[in-house]
Image (cartoon, rainbow, N blue to C red; front, top):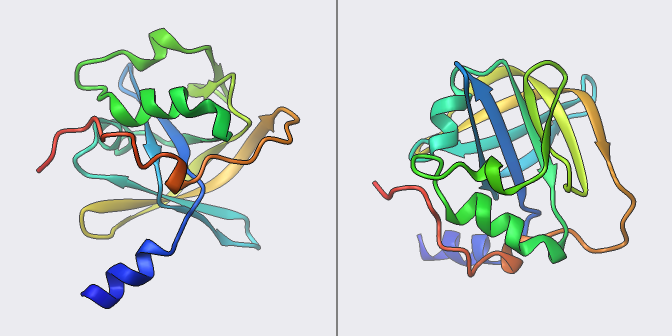
Length: 161
């Protein structure tokens, strides 16, 4: 196990915020596990913790929005990673809009896409949502993207199991 930990410690993936809407409820969380998983057709995978409030909403959602943040958006990352939707309305503190039906897009994100959920795969303590991007947008910026090492100081807001 120590060898696996040493390998994982070398990774420094981009962080993103995933938002979900279902049953009249909206939620969002900071995600460190995500990746493009197919070129043709285009697919993107995000893994949500089963302990996270966003997972409970995403289970019933037919689409999710994925947002890239820049390093200067640490406060936004801290809101979505350090607070839990079980007790806080994160969206009351940010600019957002509905996009592609009922998906929620964070207006200040560096880049975003809304994707239709094509598959859900149980991966242990996380569930993989395979998305087919449908709509996307963003803003021009030269600021580097927020990465895992930039967010290590954010204490997870979801309850621990």
